[in-house]
Length: 206
Image 1 (tube, one colour):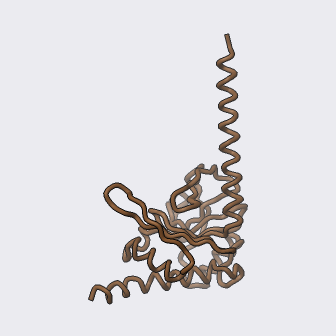
Image 2 (cartoon, helix red, strand yellow; image 1 turned 45 degrees about the vertical axis):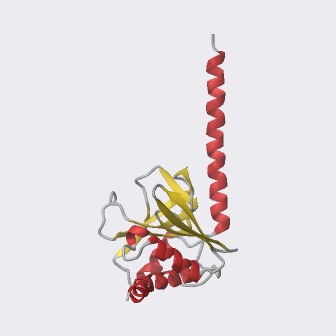
Image 3 (spheres, one colour; image 1 turned 90 degrees about the vertical axis):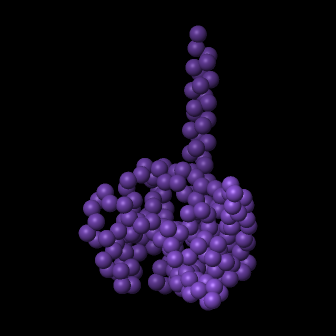
């Protein structure tokens, strides 16, 4: 009975994975979505897909975006070339908080997100197993998080990087993700270097 229930719980997620694979898979030009689409193009596809009551927009409430880039690492990057895309109702006000949809760089999508809190019908461990079935070359690893063991999944192909963290499942176009992280780290290193130089100058003052 439990096995049957588990399969029923996993079915919607497997359908979601197939959908996202079509949207963001190794054939980066696969319709209806593809890497590099603009906000307007994404909104048009969503409207044709039967979600005409929702639109996508850039998240404006945060000046800094925390971008996960591996199962255990994230980087805080000032909003600029990097933007977070959120899905909101057409009637929502400008200050409303939408559902995180993905990420764009220089106006073009390079990441999709499915947060666990938006798929409460299934547990993270079940989702990890489903991802492993969908991407058999991916790796599952486990770490201790306090009194419990947490499982993470990671798969990296030429055109698709998939991983989970404690928040959800992330799908990225690898080359753009690497570029965003490199540029973000350079900015942080530059700020650290400037701070150290200013500190040394202050210490030299009589």
